[in-house]
Length: 548
Image (cartoon, rainbow, N blue to C red; front, side, top):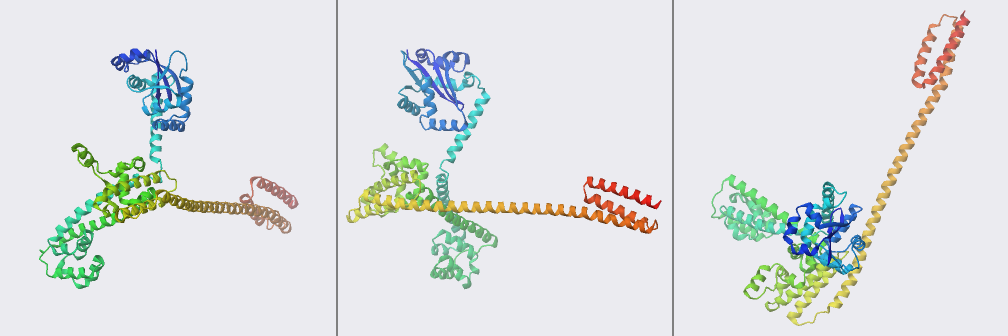
């Protein structure tokens, strides 16, 4: 009888359950489905063999990343080696929910793996009653562990490869395509609206953005004079067109237009002009982003076509995983399935048709050059995806190869061998990578120097503050000492005056003494004040005795 163990991966840790009487359960699947909802019946079917809790949130994240990628983590390997029964008459069989992880475990530990069927039903019950099957684990603690691990796992997936994120490329190329459609629609609306007033302008100016700028500048055609000729020349970049517009405005067959309608046309045309300017800025942003994320693909096939390939594949990693045959027809899925359904000719190219190479090739060579170009695109995407330092060296070399192959189809000149070209590219790429690393090191050194200067400036400022504070404290101490020295000298003078006057001027020294008392109380501490009062009392007694 084969003994079945089931592995369950939870946010709290790994759990290994032993299933009792696996043959009877296998025969009675409907009873298993009913017993899953009842904890009493389900606990009689299954028993917890071992539980391995994760030590930290970081460890849980590492383990769950390994499980999601179908890799056997060291903790999982140790857990299964120590807890799965080995040897004996009964052969251990392990039930796993993920077939990819099961294949990895089979290769790593030489186990017999079972997925689906009974295992899926048992794991459904384990997932439902897990907090009751494991002692010391409450439903609240299990939900908190799941929530925390879910947040950290999602955050790690989002933060993966932040500097070379291709999500921005996908969004920007989608916005660029939408802007092109909207600008064309709005420009046609401006042409139709302003054409009632000035229909001849449509035939003279073909470009949509130029037409909107002229509609905004001219306004009422009757007010167009030769003074505005220079401004029209700046927009059209052609003096002949500017003169033709001026002549057509004088003999136009258009209807008159009210000022209110003209204001609305001008405001709408200004919106269209601002959209075209924003579209230009967005294309520059896309060009710079492609230079950071996929420089080789952009150098080979262009920024816009490369961005469309990445967007259609979903990510740069997905595009790197595709074979050349898939990249060749990427974007022509409908035509492919229609051809397979009707048993017709399959498409030769998809999105890569928009590159300049296929347009330049002859009709009989379009399929051959598209196949060759798709091959080079897969190489470029893989280099961009898995290289540490992004450079466009390989893209330039691959582009040269496509140019040589195109010339070979037209003239018959033999192209260079791929091995020689790649050797040159590797040598140049290593030099470029070394230069980039040097620049990065210089930047880091400059940053460190700036930080050191800031720290030194802060330390000197703190030192100056301490010196000022110490100087002020010393000045206060010296002033207090000086006051103490002055006090006894000032107190001796009234004593002599009292003796000489013989009671005539006794009132004046007493007042001075009172004033001096107040000053000493304010300047000196309490202990000094008490000593001074005692001395004064003694002096008064002596003066009274002498008077008597």
